[in-house]
Length: 241
Image (spheres, rainbow, N blue to C red):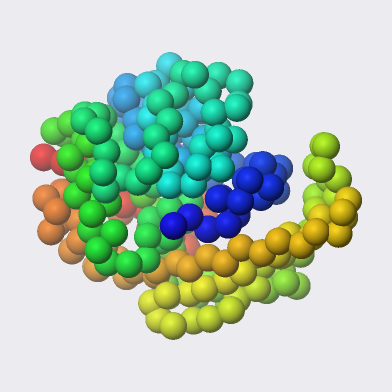
């Protein structure tokens, strides 16, 4: 199940406008170059921002996401015909043999239950060619990022063409370790509509992730720092032998 911010058509349509700075994707583009990737699987592709950036560089991109509303937004973007879009998850993929698979932003942490998490790692392994890489990020639990998820820290108003003013903010609702749940609220000035989206993330320790990867046959080549959030996240680079 996808969160409403990705699954609800009205929220999916404004997702990019509410989060226009995607410089967090730059390190993933650099890693695609680093590995000489010509075919990339973008797991949890959402509205297709990263997959389309890959396609702009001449890379064959496959975007997979369980949220149909987000996939529909991606398919409506210019150049979307260059990307293969799949509505589903990485646990059940067609044969692909990609050079690189990615889970950007919150994707890895949003897979909260152990069984889907292990199915994702297994399905991704099968989608990689021998020698291919899986790259993803996850927050360092020691930094306790959720303590800053308050209305005061997050409230903003965004003017969106054809929509009008949308106020949005996040509030922490529950910490039941290792799960952290929070709620985004979206208030539409044009018609007074208010929508909410609840999300839960799983905070995994570095050694837990490394064990999970090894259990599915991956070789962990490196654990890097996130350039845009130094000291706050782990970026895992794993290879299928």
